[in-house]
Length: 219
Image (cartoon, rainbow, N blue to C red; front, side):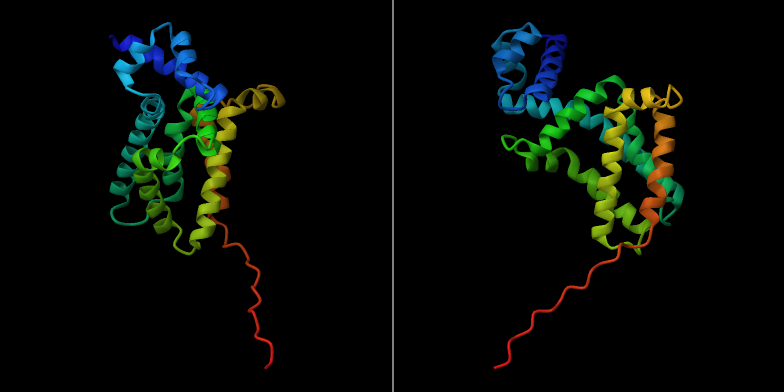
């Protein structure tokens, strides 16, 4: 069984899983789309669950490797001081934004990972994402020490959402800007996103409503 066969299976699985969801995309449909028999899937992946995991690993592994490499370089340059916020954002955002034409399908797949109850998201998170998330969270906390943890979590997820929107809605941005904006250029898109996200992350902590303490009735 060749690596080309394995790649065809992964390509077909990625597309169908993104379009139909993890339960509805059957192995029969995947093998038909890939032009292989079921034995090829069993040979390379052993099960549908392992095939799904391999689809995520193929995309996440190189992205996360580049993220950690960039973060290591940032921290080395900072010499035990907090990493500048723009450098952190660059290290975190640019590897994902450099996906190119594969971004649309992969983002739909990631969306299904977060919403499809048939997939064990915790398993994939712990094996492929958790180390990267924790490394970057520690770095962001050092850079923004005054920010309460809940504010940081909210603002980072807003930033990830903005990045996802750029990657998935590039044609719309090109259309409404009359070609003035080029979301297909990861450096340009990253520069604009950092200019937007930096001030948002640096903003003072959000005001919180005081919770009324429960009072005991007089006895």
